[in-house]
Length: 141
Image (cartoon, rainbow, N blue to C red):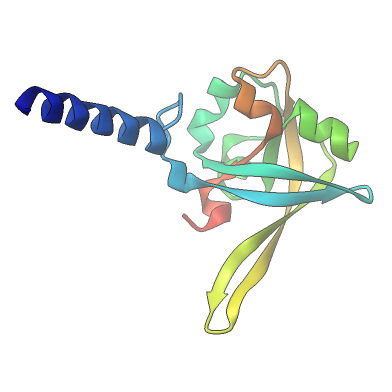
């Protein structure tokens, strides 16, 4: 019985680690689903808050300085998002978080506007194709 409990406990611990961190070691609490809109088009995306120092791990080229990215003015998007919205670097993107601000009467959607800093191509991992990366400052983290 002790062996079963030990193995079960070990499996629970491993599952917890994989549930709460991704390949880059970021916690799951730093991302949310949103609606991205541009050019009269919309698509569902995952929004992830990152530090400006994490930009090189996305394998992108951009003219945006780390300081501007950290200030929350820009977003880096995946190729699939760019194609769905017909946007490229320099275009504006609107993100709507349906779970935005909690009030006593329910959630009030939060809307954020970003300038596209770069499109991830090729994506360093599958998740990056449908993700919009913004600074944690912009998300209020």
